[in-house]
Amino acid sequence: MSLEFECTNVVPGCEGKVSGETVEEVLGRTAEHAKDVHGLASLDEETIDKVKASIVSVS
Ligand SMILES: [Zn+2]
Image (tube, rainbow, N blue to C red; front, side, top):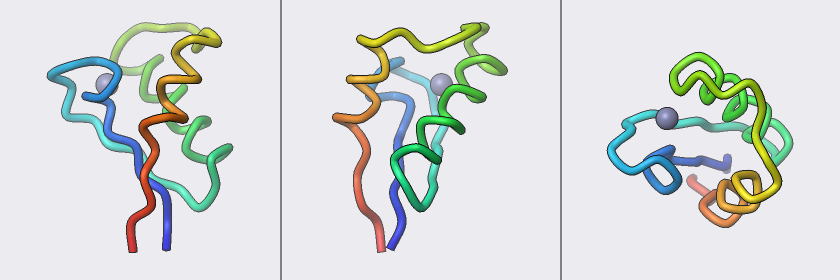
């Protein structure tokens, strides 16, 4: 089982998907995605909360 986050939940229309074994891993990769694709230097608290709320478990 792993965790997955779809960026469209926070940035509507973005097809980016991030997966990882832990929430921390997903958040780390999401931060990289946000930097590379959306030009965000870092994620603020509100965005991190949205990301966490959108992470789902996949088998
Ligand atoms: Zn995105």
